[in-house]
Length: 433
Ligand code: ADP
Ligand code: ZN
Image (cartoon, helix red, strand yellow):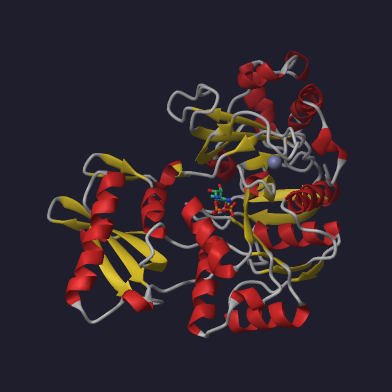
């Protein structure tokens, strides 16, 4: 078994020992900021009162609103002078939150990231193209320093300009890339439209993440791009990428338990769910000095995958993120996650690489319209053929989400593709009021 660092080969009991020690230290440390001093004081939590990992449950949760309320520097546990970098979340849902890092924090993040890439099969000899944004978005600098730490030659291309990305891949012999899944699908379509065979490119690994995607989308990316795609999970509040990563077995993402304690709770009762059940992921940082965060409610829904991984790492695995609690659509009394729709669409050969879910209001009734790009070869003049595809999509969607949405077929590349995370759901209901 080949690992990047010794912490990957710890036994279960060793991991738990490290977690407890680091948790006690973190509880001690956060008392330097008024917010946590007060919170923990009110809950009667002192460093001495954390005697086992179960005592974690006595610590109150931290929410996104808490982070917002402490904007920008209320959660610092060091002098401002010790901070060497600031990141802010892209604010997909609401106003941004800020996370500050000391030099040691950046160092440990880079190591976690290097370990993550190694676990997905990236090696020092690889040429690594980073196609995500380099500004406040943590996917840029986070991946960049991780790949550098591992020893790759990094090409910091940033997002957009697909023609230039292709030139970089060809000219610099890019073998591994960080690319968000919706852009990977777009790239595949872009190459196809230009008759460029991805098998002729040197690219062999894609690290895909930062946005929800289905197993079906991953398989598509792998087949169309002729490479292996590995799921990468992280969030700005917990540094960014490098929280959990798929190994070459592609059976869930190893969550680095020497750096984070993970819990999965019922989002309503906040009680832990039964082992293997889906719930909200809650994370506590164990190695952060500048801005440790305790029991952060990620709003991301997943489950622990029970049992050991064939790769030999003991760090527990989380399943593909089902979606964010905030992404849930409630329509006609039915709860629907956008990924349920993607799962149906990406499994159909006629469906192209992009889709959009529109929520509309007609009178007092809410409607869902699913706009689906159809591959060129299926976009024929024959109305009957198109009608049959439309019907089939509609009935498969009904089987999955229990309501019949309107299905609108559109031509390849007709749904606008913006840089960054795809906006799958467009809610037009407010405007209609
Ligand atoms: P924002 O919250 O503004 O989007 P972040 O860049 O911090 O800012 O995004 C983190 C979020 O992105 C996670 O909480 C999760 O919802 C989503 N995410 C990140 N990686 C993945 C992944 N591999 N699969 C699904 N969702 C992901
Ligand atoms: Zn594994």
